[in-house]
Length: 203
Image (cartoon, rainbow, N blue to C red; front, side, top):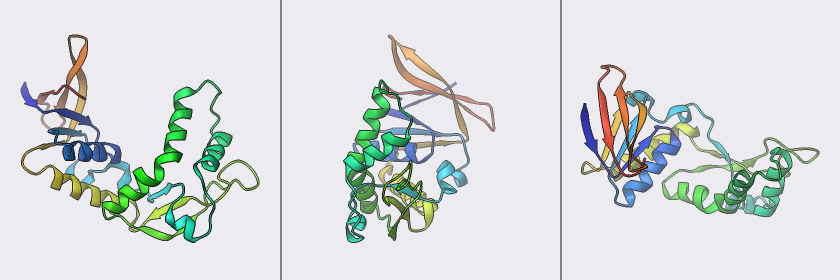
């Protein structure tokens, strides 16, 4: 079995995996990204998604005089999310998202060269019932396919110098453990059946 070493293994080549790997590379880490699909389909379902996202308190909302706030967005979320009172972590995630979607999603994407259409849409409308009480759905120019293309290009730039290993066509089959901690993963090349052990202190 072949063995590869890196600082971090990321399993899954969708947008979450791509962004995680990108940020890790920029932080100076050596990253192995395991993606079960082909290089042409790198990005997963994002390649076919429309490219809209709920964002709170953006400049575009301000220009359209949409008085959105994290407090209002959280109230909308909790009203139709069907979370129980003791669902601590889902509630904490909802609060974190509405408080940080402007800086950590909207502004971050703008810095990456992604642009938004000059309109805020109103999906899951809730003015007269459950849903959003005002427009906060922002759509990416070129749909999510363009967003994915842009982030993959950034990933490849950040991974120059052999700091990024992309394993397309590989499926993670197991996690390695050592001393009670995860120490890597095992992946199989689905075309050849060959296994590779990916050693890393973080997976």
